[in-house]
Image (cartoon, rainbow, N blue to C red):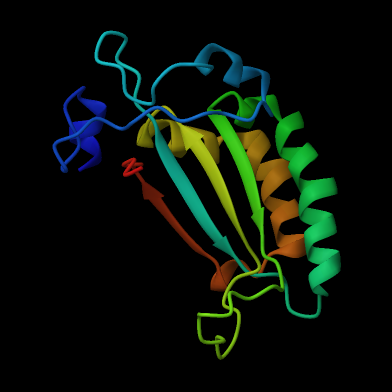
Length: 161
């Protein structure tokens, strides 16, 4: 699936990934403003690493969200050896509000979702193998994440609407 996307061909759904907009967080995003995620003429293609995150046992929900947003987010941005590979980084913080037409969950499985866009799966590997990621960012993740109970996967976006 991803190899076809990286080779400049349509996704397995037979469509090219549609345009999407970026919130500017890293200076590296600026060249991508107004471009599509898949552009046949320029060969742009991106994949997204999604992390469904759980807070470290014993950490309050409030402290988890504060630390992730105010400490970890800026730390990730400051490590240029890692962030040079990241085209977009968004944090989705869970909220306690429920949709009335949905049944209440037995438990809330995740406290948030991290989304990181990369040019390719190979760049994901390079970013997470960077010595400065392993030296600075990874130890910080251990301060607030329950890593064994987090779920990480790579997706390609397919716009429906």
